[in-house]
Length: 83
Image (cartoon, rainbow, N blue to C red; front, top):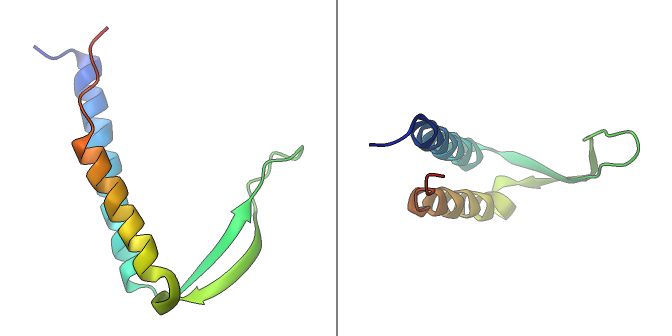
């Protein structure tokens, strides 16, 4: 029998996989993609810096492929052992 923590963990993982699939679909349909860096300094701000806007043709396929790999890795992730 699975513990409540294991069931919750599996549910959370399925949610993350679904979010990643939805995000890949957004990038697949995008016309332009803005890419930038973030840094956490003393202000603890996560603002996007050093941005560049690229066409989806330039970078979209790379992002979609990365998200699909991430989704596959999460699906293949072995269940965590119960304590």
